[in-house]
Length: 450
Image (tube, rainbow, N blue to C red):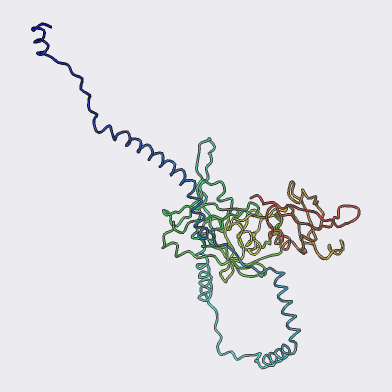
């Protein structure tokens, strides 16, 4: 290599050198950070789905006792129980004959000492003030009973004659019969609230609260609606009282009564009168309801209750169970027979379906068929449990299980003690053939449709 070449190599103007580029620090932790975010999102989604599935079950498990509602009951005494109580008292009187006889003799002596002609110190003639005073007393009884009545309105969607959509408002009265489980349960006429788009309890013209249709029975045209107590202002809630449901077995023709609710079609109306007749009844599926009539003028739009002068509800005015002589009379369902139905609606319990229309038998009819007890079947519902088991019109039901059937009251109470799908052995007497004979039929009970 020449000297010149050597000098040129040592003194190069540009010398190229490859230098490795340094990584920026943020790339070292960016990818792990992004992975952490993705995993957190996945964990959150899995946790959310798991919580949604498990939370209701866990809540029900740990709050099982809190969710148990207090059952609604209405104690009642049936006429047969009254007779049994009277018989027990008679037996006790026989066992204690000497003591009772001594008390009776003493009572007779005291009665003999009473002056049959007491001295009248002063005669006071009744005037219009006394008449007004009597009605003041009646109004006081009505005022107390009305604390259990509330105004219910419903909106039903329909169409006018031109096919345009319209809303129809229906107003009626309801009876508050329970305030258990932090809600008010109200008895209303079914046809006033069924198929309604909304149901309200009206406290004032501008203040209303939502109500919910809880259960109903189409045969008796009655429904139970519920209102949450927390939705009602305390001022109004404290003024509402639970109705006193009395007994209709003890009523008598001539008893004074009053009608509350909307007996003349107007909510909040009132009328007074007397019981004019009793003893009629209405046959419904697997039951028989007691009816009575009053002197109150009948109205096709009436709703409400009949109250005695003790302030007890003894009946519910009906517009649907009116046939024959009752068609143009103010007709009332006795409260005693529908208490169990109201209780089942309040508790949302299934009603048992057997599937017959039947009636009590007279003593003469029992003698003709050589039996001591039973109910006569007038009609068997098609596709009902009774129909499937082979029961026919004209049969006499003598016994269900171990329970002897003496009347429709016993029949209904007996089947109501079972559950849907229970099988029962029914002893009947068939009267439709040439010769009467007893048969045992197996009936599988079902839940009654509303």
